[in-house]
Length: 195
View 1 (cartoon, one colour):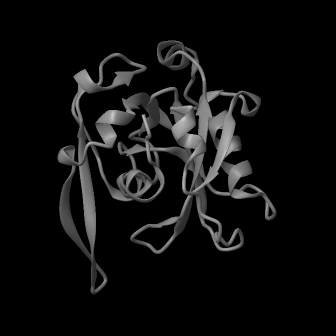
View 2: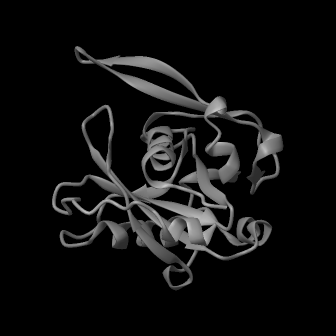
């Protein structure tokens, strides 16, 4: 897995001044970390998402933001994370630019889930196998309309027998929106597994 990540086609032309937020696209060995946001969150309540957020100070980079947010939301220390790089941003329906920061931790997935702690922003954490997400047959498409424009929406069901969850009680969840678009773009434009 780490070999494939080292061979990523990374973005070179990202304007660090014009981004709204950054997410930590964290691989735990052959799994991708996603969270189930708390129902009490003011935005995206109950949705499957990446750990991430907005910069806390003006000159904070997208990588610094992604690492800080991971530490704040899960307790995972930045020093334990290997940052691979950043990929092309995704724009939300509100035209906000979100930068995915690709990172990796070499830790047993079950131990990783056992050790992370929520700061209240999420109710559950999922580790989804990479091979599950890269299978295009699992994805569906729809169309969304927003303020006189339309765009494709990607969907991918997450089912309990395919993922590891911190609570151990994961049921069927739906991956969609900007999170799904980031994952879809990652496999379409950046990830080439040469196994």
